[in-house]
Length: 498
Image (cartoon, rainbow, N blue to C red):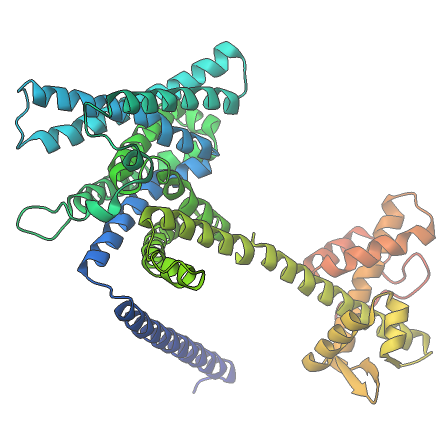
């Protein structure tokens, strides 16, 4: 026969499995309901295959950018990503002009011009990416300036050169400055692979995404170590400078793939915002990569959906019914910023509101333990066994509302019993209070033994520390002390058990 402990364990396992099943069922139901609502919303706004391919293309571009962006954020080189988004411009323009000149000279046929142009742009971006990193280091070392100043000098200069080339050659070659800066994703999806409905940009960005995923998988250890500590990576035989230049080259090549989709400026948001958002949600690199990819894809979807719906809703009410949509690339950046804001506010660890709530929970827990300690000491002195709310508030030194919430929480957990308008310890609460008072008096004894302090200076320190001394620390303090019967004030130190 099974023992009671075994039966309890089996029953607990069954309850846990049942709980997981219920949670999974509810989650699946919620996802299906959300999908149905989303489908209805998309039908209302006239969503079609064109919109789907726009989102797919934008999502692939954003996800491809987010992968190198993760390591730029981890290496605290986010501004380098911003710089590369600008400094690749002259390399792309020069490569574009070179390919156009070769076509005009008859070296490249019209049928193969697009392939040669994309290859030249990739090579130009790779070269200028490495050149930008090298120039930044040279300016920093030779000019003896900080890294951010050197970066600002290099990327503004190269970006200005790129814009100058565009302006000088815009009349001879079809280069649209707005296309360069803001992207043309709305028309990019119209350029499809022959005999298919798949946009060429989706194929290019998808291949770059797969290449980046392959590189991250193959060199995950090297990227992780060099990102967190370049000195340690060097001692382990990993050339941190080589990894840095390789990351710059990959980032530059990725920017080119997204260049025609989201433009040179807005690609910065796709490079940094998803990684920064994920960093607010987790500290584990593998999860951070996965979350950044999800955030990038979600930014693309929300950006396009907002671009085709929000302008009409907002501007119609303002008296401008002719405004019906806006740039998808621009709204992608807005959506990415919105997701970052949500993570910054509600993130489980670093979120502003989460920190406020954690602080409130900690404050409530401390007040609750102060109530338990006060009631225990009142029982020791036999002055009273129950105290009203106003008495608790006055003796603890807090305000009425926090004390009331803490007292009601203790009553709900069974640590105190409510007698009319007064509160007194219950047996479980008395045991909890006893451990708290033991921690307080052990700390006072420890301070008195190791520090030359007056007796009236011990209580304030112990009143703060007592809330954070667990069972192991209490045992270590007891083992350190010669006498654990009484504290420096002559009061009994309660035993750990019984």
